[in-house]
Image 1 (cartoon, rainbow, N blue to C red):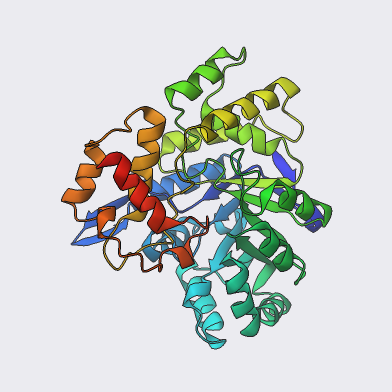
Image 2 (image 1 turned 90 degrees about the vertical axis):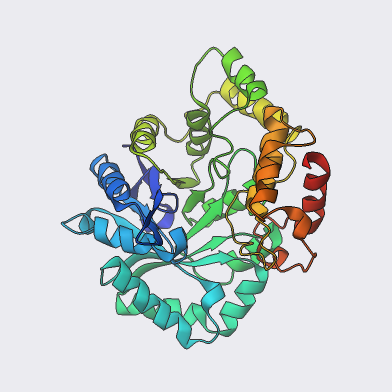
Length: 377
């Protein structure tokens, strides 16, 4: 496993960071739970393969991810990794909530300290709220007490908000949505470079844009196939990220052992400066082709959910995008019919706007739901 420098912290961290938000779920005793029989061996295989960065969060897998990770890190595995989890801003209604949530997370993770503690999914509005509640002082105190080693944030908003947040505290790391399709979205390529100049390590999330870059439609695969060097779309996406020295670790949210082993192979062969100019030109061509077809930039993060009218917003946008990408953009779309049958179709939207306040992509959700309906119904 290739190790990469971690900015001003001077650490050596695996290029592959294990994201713990996409493990398979199963039904048991009338409850939906994490399939630990699959998830825990995945975590162990990743660590045994050289991964030393494990990333989870309070809300992942319906609040169960931290529990699964805590189980997996017993038996000596905790000491082998840098463990990261996140403070859920949306559950903080008063300053003392931060401490209560932190204690709960330590208990779930079965540890007495965290290596990286991130203020989760910050945007401009949330940052102002968390500042008022004293989050900077809270993080500084936890560091002084040795209960966390590094104070960090993850971000979902626009560039100007990012620049304000990154300059208003002495952050140890930032976690950003970044991939070859998002160079002008979210914190942007400029934001990644800015963190690098400050010596702040960048951990990348959504490197495959919610999985959209993993399975290339025919018109994209033709571009890859015409290139003399043959690699999977996943490998091309990760290779592009790891080429950049500002990127310290790339999170991959695997859901199977097959994906885990493939990631171990991919990340063992990537490092800063690995891309040739011809390869960079290939990615630029792929980006242009995708941009010509994609309907809406939804990553399926589900922050917009639940909808009070039961509209399944991420599923609707996934159906719409997939139809556009894979040639199924037509009236009477079968997947759209299933949305209707399940009572989750977008026609139930009353444009209350609740979803938009939580959308990290700043998508005009009600308007796009109408457009999806017009294309697919």
